[in-house]
Length: 549
Image 1 (tube, rainbow, N blue to C red):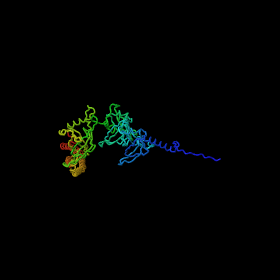
Image 2: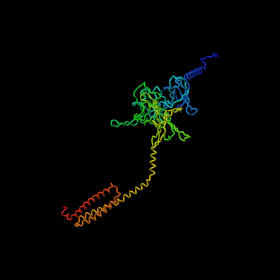
Image 3: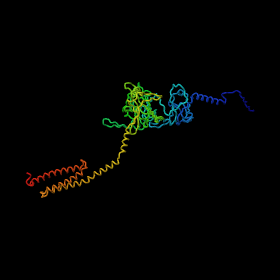
Image 4: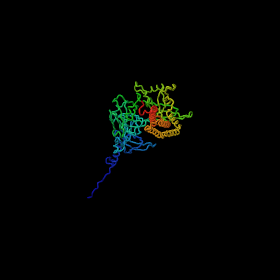
């Protein structure tokens, strides 16, 4: 019996669930959903301009806000003018509310400093961009300029400006600020002042300690070694090693007072050390510096920028600029001296927060003038002196303002004649015949030595005379004494004349003169006694036997 083959009928109907196209269709739906999710969550693209790239990698480096990733760097390219780099980043949708005028961006990288290691997490995750912002902005921004430093929000504290007359190598970014040996802040910036002379140090004080900063607070640089004498004992304090390496700033406070706030534009002075605070300060008002210009037609070649402005011997300002211009008519260099003066010196102690400007203008009306005087007569350096001048012209007794400059009345600069007097003395000394004077003195000394060479001969002659007189009195034939004595006296008189001639040029206080004078007195006394003795013998020859009675 034959096998029957079943007949297969082809179906003309389309079955969706058994179709081979179901797989790609499902894949397409899933891909579309994922694309929708991606574009639905994807935020805008922004551009951040930095001075240089510091380790950011496109497609890898992240943008974080409060340590939460909110975007990714998609491209890093050089700016068209070559002055910086452009970092292109794709932000998440939930970060759009923070992309406003408050947004700040900076690069976080590992840094090793004296205060420790920062950005240590970047050693694992890589360099990233940190963001700070807050809601409430009025407009969305697409382009930003990145910072070279980590931004610190004011909500966590407050910035204060300290001004130093010159830079201190121990004060730098990151230097700690102390109050009663408690670290309360740090130095954020150290920049050159607007006058190009002073140094501005901007410190950030943490919020809990801001109320301790008052307008009368004093800031100073901690000394590495300080010594004080207390009750006869010497106390030596050495700063901690950390301060020796990175420096430190300390400030004083009268106490916590939240109601009394420091004005926004208030500037504190940074003292070089604590002992400098105790030095004299004139004035009772708030420090207030005013810019003035002095005109002069005299030579101010030795007046340098930074020279002091003094009143009653105290420094109240300094020279900030010196401008010289040639005058073709007078053939002189006309000078304009720009100075800054702390007018609080002239403040009235009875008024609070007095800047002293009114009293300063009043002093000028009453005769105060700016003098350019010599600071050092040896080097010839100059400074500006404020002093009252009774001879000042009344027509020029006000401070005038021309354009943006305020001109202060001045008086003529009269150079000190100290150096001129010294020069005159030197010229007179050069004209003196010093060589002739020396030769004459040498000749006088040589002539004065000649009598001294004959002094011994005179003394020998005197001694011979005395010996002859002694021999005469010792002889038995003393009866013939009158003749011999007469001869001896003649010899003595001749000797005396020679001695008087020899010692004529001697000073009355010389040793030889005193010795000869003493000897002559002795001889004179002996001569007078011998004369009386001889007269006795002539009157009574036997007086040697029977006496003179």
